[in-house]
Amino acid sequence: MSRAWIETHRIPALTSSDPVEWNHAWDKSIVAEIPDYLSAHATLREANEKHLYEYSLVLRTVRDEQRRLSYASASSFLLENIEGRWMAADSSSREQHLIKGIVWTCRMSPEFEEYRAFCDEVSLPALQKEGGRGFLDLLKTFVLSHRDAGFDTIITFPSVRFDKMIRSGEQGLSKDQELFQALAKANRNIFICHFLANTQNSFSNRGETSVRIVTEPGHMSMPPSARQTKTTERGAINFCMKCCKDDQDGAQFMICSVCRRIVDRNVSYCSRQCQKEDWGHRHKAICGKALVSLEDAHKAAFGRSWSENGGGTNFQDGITEADFTYENASGVAFMVHSIGKIGPPTAPFTRSDALNRQISLLHTDASPDYFLRSTSGVFCPIVIQDIWMKSQFRSMRNEAMDSANHRAVAAIGQFMVRKYADVSGARTEFNGQDILNQLTEEYGGGVSAGVRVMDRGRAADPSGRTEIERLGEELRKLPPRSAN
Image 1 (cartoon, one colour):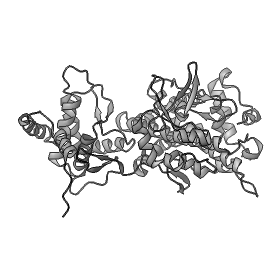
Image 2: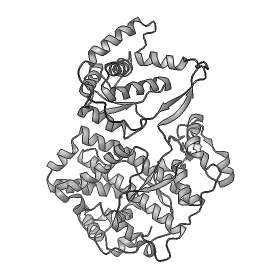
Image 3: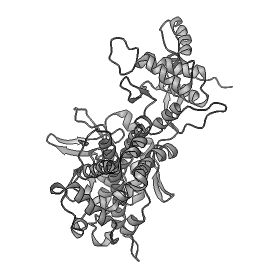
Image 4: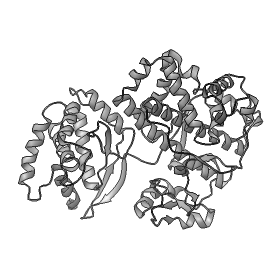
């Protein structure tokens, strides 16, 4: 991108000016006459295979950043009362944190300050409107949208100003211009995500993020998590296309030889399991095939076509209700379900505020099986590794959330206390009584008594298994059904 915007509006250098004066200059430029940025300032890149694939990685970064922000924002609203504290703060205090959030975000990359030209939401008048409600409304967009629309969407923001800046002429947009427009929209979203996260950090006294965006000369900004490779002093570092783990610990990554040979694309995986899981819902559709359009890039990123919805773009990921199919010891296939959407409760059960908080946290991320409050008061995700126990735990958990079924609540309580608090000789962040207290807040009374009854059955079990473990073992060994 060109720095013509900054020079045209005589915005002082961030590194050598007062942050308040610098921000005031930016706020004035954002409400100035809307230019035709695409024809006047855009540095176009050819919409070829390499650049379209890089764009697909940027899209995945947008999704990952929004997931992280959604989780952090849910925690801020539900656990830290950010809404009450923000509205109680005076205008000058809010302004101080907002400017810090903007400054910290612009420091993350040499190009990030330029992306602010696309973000009319990130101005003090917009953020301070209605006594500070503007910032909270923007922050809630992520929490509420991810909870309602699912965790595999990219949230975009309708902006008349942005659309006018990146508008097409009478002849429409060329493919190169379409790529620039798409990249501008993606980078606009990344900027807003980081601004919201940084402002929360400032307001909660957590300090400036230590992450810095790495920018290659003449290329778009891509956080390291968006790259399949990056170069360091020790050479190229690979990133797993499925889980984003890197190989800095010396792990041997697998590279897709078909993509490397046919289209010179580096697609790497940290394990056979990640490769297998990525193949079915995403990589199979693009393996060895050159990307020639934005839709190809969307499929490369998420495995499904994209669609316009309500003025914003939703890029649906390839994760479905039934995530993976596994075979047990007898060759019986079972589907292990992802979090999906937890439906409304069964009457007459009414969910408590604490249980609604738990469901909101779960809807921000598919990976955790539950969120437990640690001894320091922070909600931490727990992830069950054994696939058969995971299946039974999630089944019991969903039943508990549906109707507060006493047996289901007791089963998940027993499992979490025994596995995450009562760990002999090991450090743990959780306390058994705190777990029971948390479940009581979520599901009501009788949790401790239910766990004690279930523990009596555990004592009678020769191997001392919890109910979840027992059911998981039965599922693992279940024989095939006989044909009728």
